[in-house]
Image (cartoon, rainbow, N blue to C red; front, side, top):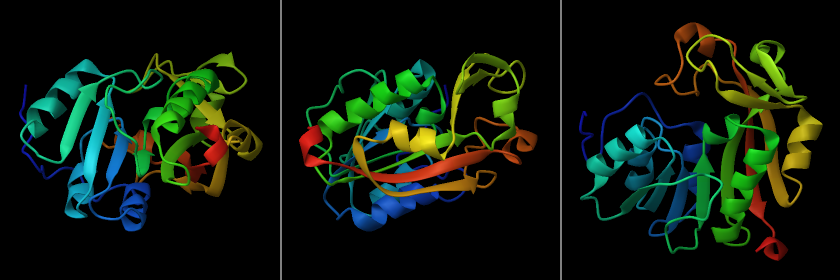
Amino acid sequence: MTRLSQEPTLEGPPHPLVAALADVVAPGKRVLVVGFGSGRHLPHLLERGLFIDVIEEDPQRADAAIAGFDQHPRVRIARARYDHPLPFDATYDGAVTTHVLLHGTPRTIASALAMVARQIRAYAPFHLTLGSQRDPRFRTGTSLDAQTRVAESGSEAGIPHAYFDAGGARALLSSWKILSLEEHDAAQTAGRWAHAPNELETMVHWFARITRRRSDH
């Protein structure tokens, strides 16, 4: 397995939602990253002086991430399910996920949101992406329910993806305070480690910035 450097040079700049999170969380605070992916976001967060906890469900990516950052004093990484209690004893000043909540069904995504809500401070920022029903993939594949499709071919064949219209996205996030919710073409922001170039060209994601209300804890 290839060992990642402590602060690796990975694909491109961080996702805009990661950069936005780093702009609003003060140095020295601790943030939660849900899904390691290629690891491209961690260097930017570290440059801003943040402490970072990462959970990654995929065993190979989790092992590579743990091996690559095991000596970094401001990074903790654990293999864990996204809809289960976190393995870290911490309360977070911010959280971000750029791909995890694209996958699964509305029910599993709601469970992952609830997990974050239990351990993020009231009014702390949580930045995330959701699938949009304007994405052409919503009209292909096998239907599991009104919002979930399973691709039959391509790099994510067999993986359920949930897609939301504006009303569905707001309903999913109804227990949070929504600061912004915008649709964006994802050709330049989705992970190139997970998708072929022709798949990236037509992707559409919701970019959401939300905070936990005090009563949700």
